Length: 295
Image (cartoon, rainbow, N blue to C red; front, top):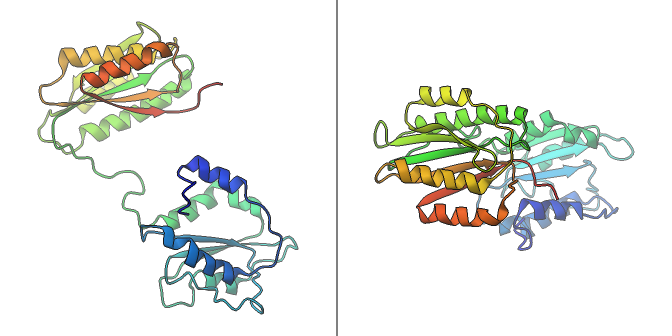
């Protein structure tokens, strides 16, 4: 909410974890006015949504602040959950909070009987789908466009720590990435070329595809990839890819590596040098890490 001490998802989660129970009355209107005057104005973008979680029993006899106070500054989703006395949320209050009677875009009003229902996947997906309905690419199918030739290498982790099942799943993802790159708009028919290299331990790198532009050939090679099931040496893999670019990079093409990893490597002392050598050779490295390293 614009807090200078919250810059990452981890910091936001920690702040939420440390919230304390106030255990006072229910002055929802006053709380919404406070949000409008002190929090929402911190956002530089006007693309904001307010999600109000309440038991729907605001003390409107004492709190005279209108419940639709947020409606002029942001779309509102009101989410009412029954209170500790098992009394259902007041639908009229929820509707007013969600701008049901305001001359603005109507929000969304939802009710649930218990807080455990908030954790259901289907419910969360419905709420986030409504909140994000204005985004342009909800399924990450935004078009890719290459302005200049590019040689791209997909470097796939095939080590024991990944596991054979996860390796097969990663192959499916690599196929989709390859399709996106090779079907993208580009300056010429073969101006975007793709390599696929899987890696495991030292001297365990396999070049499955070497700079091809034909998607059918690339996906056929990906489907035939066999799990190496060895150690994990990311530095050795990067050195092998750097050599590959030195041997066969197209003149004038940008050099990019998308590195898939589970976050483990057995030769950390040589990894930094391998990264430095790759960068010195003009290779741009992007890392996609799944999982976490053991302590």
